Every structure is written in structure tokens, then in C-alpha cells.
Length: 360
Image (cartoon, rainbow, N blue to C red):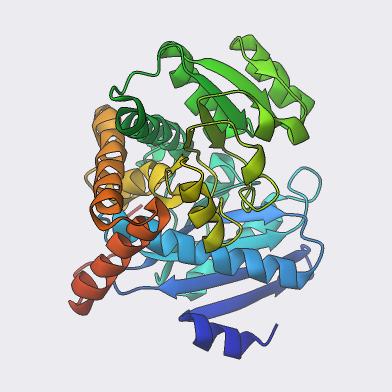
């Protein structure tokens, strides 16, 4: 990867390589855009095979966060961080705090939170080194685990899509195939069960499948989840799962999940559209978390407001569907258009939040 050439070609502002051999830290922080405010994005810890794989992921995720923050109406730009390593065997407090010190050197241009391989306890460690962290426990003045409201938002996006496809937003009796039963997948499933939906779940970890079974879900091997007879397919694991090999297998009318970067390429969104499958763009369905973090960072978060904040995701999805139908374009293009319009117009103004410092 020719790094500077890639950054210039794709419009990124900054990439930071972080290294501390004393704790085994190898990480990247990417900032895509700060026109709307400081770049927000979680830190992912994953055992990438190569540094180029890690860079590719952090770039894709940072861009997705910029679009997510823009379309959800927050005062954030987009960024992301990845730590190279296995969170189950290599993560330590010392490593996380070393990463946090690199975040602090950016002076508020990047605000970090949790993601795959990190959790709320890690954020507490990060907060000991920098104020530029969000998603802290309620007891520390934060908004708590963002996966809770993210799961709510995924369900709200499903309801919006259901109304467009079947004329009613009820999920009662609908079968939902969930790929990945981590934090977001679990919270989504719990709400779906309460709504009367039936669940089919796939995950690479046996303990996750045991949790799914306790909710009454049936389980299938990971490779079989795409071909499950269902109404809604819900990707809640990693990205790139919607591609030329998997899309032909889908039997769902709707795709709506909490994973980032679900489309391997933009053309795969076109493919879903041609197949008559309504796709809820991932940066819309998973935007509940950033909406909560916005209210945390700017001092207006209240736990009792969470259901109302999650409803905003359904409203955004309604806008995307309307844009798609009125212009005759796929939903992923409609969502991109709405996000880019906001970045281009509102982003011309100097954000009043740029100098905001989180008080702890």
C-alpha cells in the first residue's frame, strides 16, 4: 500500500501508526473527516494477518464512521483505530493504556470508544490516560455500553424496512437470521424475541451459540446462515459479508444488521437492489451508538432518553427509503447521498464543538 497516495486519492485527513514494544502495541488510527466535528470511532482489537490488512480495515471503518456520524445528525467526523492482536490472549491494561496515550497526543481530533475486541472496562483504562474517550459507564458520567442502543437501532431499522416491504412495521412471526452473536447481536435478538420474531443464529464461538439457545433461537453453522429461509438477514459480525458469493444464497426480503462495512464493494449493494432485497445501509442501522455518544460528549445524555434516541434510527431509515424510491436508486447510494450532502453543506461552517473538552 502506497500510504500517502492512498490517503490523497480517498480523501483521508490523517493516519497515525502507534508502536510500543514494551507492551506489544501495534496499532493504527485513521481520521477520515473532521468537517462536522472531532472524529469519533471505536478501537478494534483483531489478530490481523498483515499490517496491510489492518490498514485496509481501519481506513474502511473510519470512512464508514464519517458517513454514520453525518447521516445521524451528530457533531462528529469519522475516525477509527485498530490494534493488531488477539483480544482474548494478548490484551492487557498496559497495552490499552499505551494506546490511550497515543490518542491523547491527537489533542481531541479523535475520540475513541469500544468496538470488536474491546469493552467498557478497556474504556475505563483509556480514561486514565486521556479525556478523549466516550461510551464510559453511567457511574462515570458516560452513556454506558453503546451496543445496547445500537441493538435498539437495528430493530428500529428493521421495522422501517418491514413497513416498506410488507406494509406494517410489526416483526411478530417474522424469521430473522442473525450472523454473529456478540454484544450488538445479543441485544438485537433480545428485542426481536420480545417483538415475537423467530431467530436463527450463527457464530464462530460455542459460548455465543449457547446464549442464543437460551433465547429460544435455533442455530446453524456459520457457512449456512446465508441460505436460511428467513424474512430478514441480519449481519452483526464483521464486514464484507455481502458479496457476489453470498448474495445469491440469500432468501430474505430485507437485510438489516449491526455490522460495519457489510458490502464488500458498492456493486454488491446494486446486486441486492436488483434482486429485490431491501438493504438497510449498515451505517444507518448501527447509528444508535453514535447518537448516544453525541449526547454523552456534549452533556445532554440521560439513560431514560435511550428509547427515544433509538427511534431516530428508524426515522433516518425512512428518509433513506424515501430518497431511494424517489430517485430510483439503491438504498446504499441514497444513504451515501444524504451523508455527503450534510458533510458538504454543514461542513462549510466552523463547528462550535471543535474545542470542546470532555470534563471528567
